[in-house]
Length: 107
Image 1: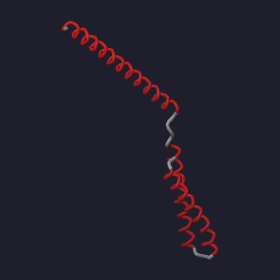
Image 2 (image 1 turned 60 degrees about the vertical axis):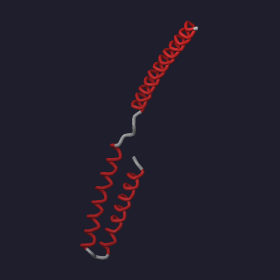
Image 3 (image 1 turned 180 degrees about the vertical axis):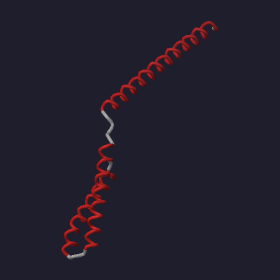
Image 4 (image 1 turned 90 degrees about the vertical axis):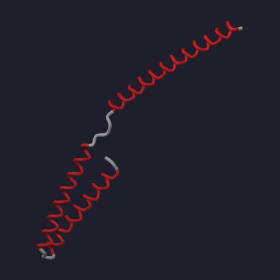
């Protein structure tokens, strides 16, 4: 869960709790429309909390297996690069040897 998702989830929960606390206060004052508005907003907030929490659970962190697979692939790539570098070194040694032999025959 990202930091931004955590913040939105906390804000939605706070919104829901404040409206839930407003329901009995508006009802005690005898304001039916005000009470109905708080009930509606409480339900909306609960829905938002549910959606955000469900979305957070869906976002699984990278699994250990995929990390191990990526590490294995990286190791294989490094081995291939090392092999190619060794081949390049062999070719350079061979060319240096040929240059040295040609230089001796010219003298």
